[in-house]
Structure formats: C-alpha cells, structure tokens
Figure 1 (cartoon, one colour):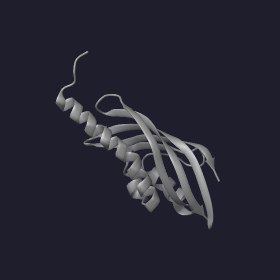
Figure 2 (cartoon, one colour):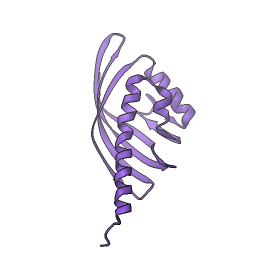
Figure 3 (cartoon, rainbow, N blue to C red):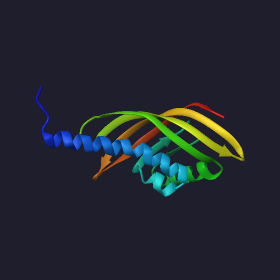
Figure 4 (cartoon, rainbow, N blue to C red):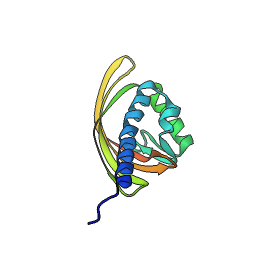
Length: 140
C-alpha cells in the first residue's frame, strides 16, 4: 500500500477538522435561533429531514422557511456527542452524531435525544451539509 504524502495527510486533517466543526456550528446557531446562519451550513440544494411531515425541506428557500417555523415556538439547547464520519475522497464524506436536546416550549421543559445521519460535501473551500436526517429516540 502506498504511503500518503505529507500534503495529502495535512489536507485530510484540515478536512476532518472542518467537518467536525459543522455540527458544532449548527447547534450553536440553533441555540441562537440564527436561521440564516443555520441554512448557510447547507449546500444550495441541501436537505433536512426530521421525521417527514414534522420538518422536511430541500433547498435554501425551503430550509429558511422550515427552520423559521420550527424554531418559532421552541427554545432549543442542543448538545452534540460522538461525531463519527468517513472521508470518501477529497470532496465527500458521510457520518453521524448524537443529539441531546434540552428545550422549553410554552414554559414547559422538554428533553429529547436522537442522532443525525449526515452527508457532507466540499463547496469551494468549505465543507457543508448536503443532507441531514434526524432520527428521534424520544422527545417530550
């Protein structure tokens, strides 16, 4: 098996760090309810699915609308854990991470948990979500 060049190894390390940062920035922006910043983490044709009819959107316009509606009456505080992913070449990766959610709605405390299945792609010099699918374990 051929050894990787130093340049290739450094590039992969930088890519891994950028991909690790995506779910962290996502949660930070959800916490702040900064919908444009959340959507900026997705590709122009990016997709999000949190259980179909509950919250599903594709493309920037739909994502903006879905996140605005989804965050309108919820005060979420998400925490990401156990982010595991694989690089599939220089411009594509897949992975998942686990979510612990603490939130309030109508003055009531809500907790939840689940995991995301993610597809990541490089757009120019940035890594972005191509798709995020959320699988709920519990929410209530």
